[in-house]
Length: 473
Image (cartoon, rainbow, N blue to C red; front, side, top):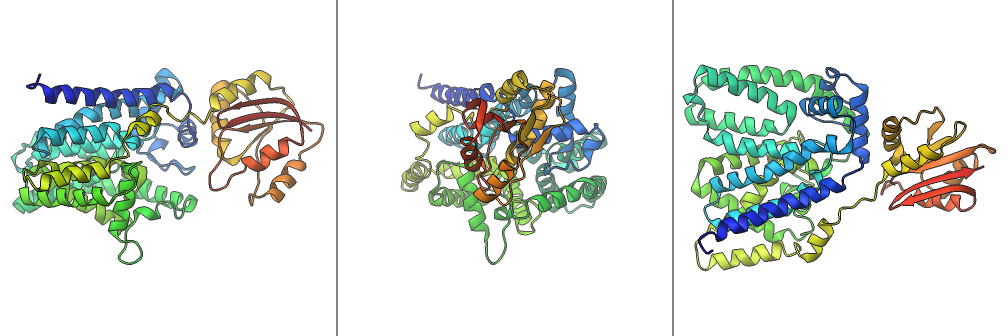
């Protein structure tokens, strides 16, 4: 048994990671607001239009969306169908991450610790069952980190170069952060030989990427900035008000939630970087250069190092944070263990209990089932702003067709404006109030729920945080 302790522990870690993701996938039987918006844009566009900006405050890599639309054509617009790609990517990532650990970490205990953190990370588990590109971003990042450091460009023949160029052209279309790893590959190989051959090789890629930038990325960024002007500001560093340490600490809090005290994690992370600089292995150098490009992009305000859009960088941060466990120093090693315990002590039984019970607060499917069964032709449907996309998508899925659908225009959000709008609803009509969720920053639930108490309620259905009312005016 002592001989096989590593493989037994690794198997337990793999099973735990798969089980946590599978549990979330099984409970992911509703589309959330962001997923609904992305799906609605897909429904309105053909395959060629998906290579252009999506609109509606949505942005996703073209090939990811095209692949998802093909699945939709074949299997239909169903929750488990659309969520299967990120789920499969998340499961595959566990095994690819292990392979990457074996290339960068030297001790079995270090590999186990890194794989454990990767398997139980809440951010990775949450996005494993969300119809967005972030889980595929992580998988593609891992594949790049595992394969690219082993490729010596100058030992490739023309056929291999052609295949590599095609892969490099396609990767950003499936995952935009792949550009960081492709850029790292170029920098390392150019500095290694200082030969113009690799520059000539990258000219077609640069031309294609510029076309992609001007026709997709730049317009998408402009639309996103107009919709959310300050949303990603926390992921951009500068020399004055927000330095890179603040950005990194904020990112640590996100990827290692609920461990909010980032001091010990940050010290270990810096120690891992120092060790990688000292060892100078291919994988260590590749990740260091890649990390430098990620930080540079944050300073230049090209790509934020923040929350889900930077989930692809999480493997690098885990590996550097765990790297100090490779130390053999009898004095420093116990200190590293203490720092790891203090930095990740919130991964306790309470954390696993919460992780095993996914939040299923949003229930648009069940609301729509009840609405469809009880709806009459002259009824009017009202949605709050946060539920509009959910209504549009699920009414399309269930075939509820009516022109009397309105988004409640309650602005600014306060009692006076809410009551004025609701009290002006035409008398003698039946009004359905369809509310899947509420925005935290602009809540309207309290005003609407309070107003319904003064009205004649013909039908009421509540499940978790979702409400459906039928009001007779």
